Image: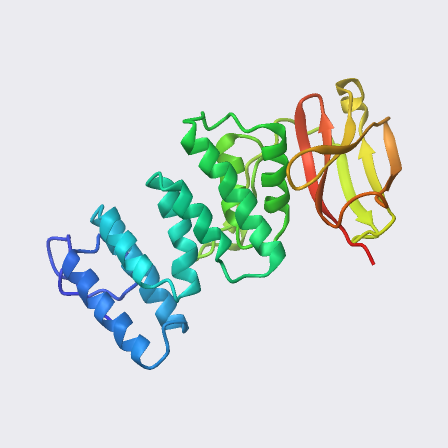
Length: 283
């Protein structure tokens, strides 16, 4: 579709993907078309998702938070709209509403855990007016785990947050702008060119009785007191062991642990270098 209202001097009849400010008139037309899709059960179609994104953009362009809230609340039957309500409630300081909404998300348990963990941190940051660089070690571990999990819907959010906090660099693809192959990635360089210590995958994972966790500790990290730390989903430490230089394997006995999701981290000094997930399942 094209729009007749535009903030440019001349009405250019550009396509929907044009980068511009959307007016209230544009929003009304978008909502009308979105409603028409609903009549034929196509709100979840690719066109419906595009329209939903454009409607939200229109409300944001108009700085109309109240209107956006009303629209998303009316569209709660749409799972995507329901998920978008969570950060909006947090931004408006409606923490109880956000928590209740998370509880009703119709998603599988691992994804629900991701939403709960991520937005609990976001609520605490905003509720207590914490500085953006004040993530605790348990919070950093959760964010690093989300950033490492490419299957999580919150993967990109966690990566952006960690990059903004200056905790880790992020290499990511440019998705929309066609450029030459040599420029297809934005690379945030490391602070130095020395090889970094590595945290490798745990096996078996899921674990019932034990998990072997491998890591490589470089000489440059030897004096930074490297250690392996495992935390449960609430952030409590359930295992910790100091590490030595070189490649090594640590066996973690999980037989006495409750079933659930755990996070194991490689820490040097007070810096979390990497975090991965470990599932514990009892037969």
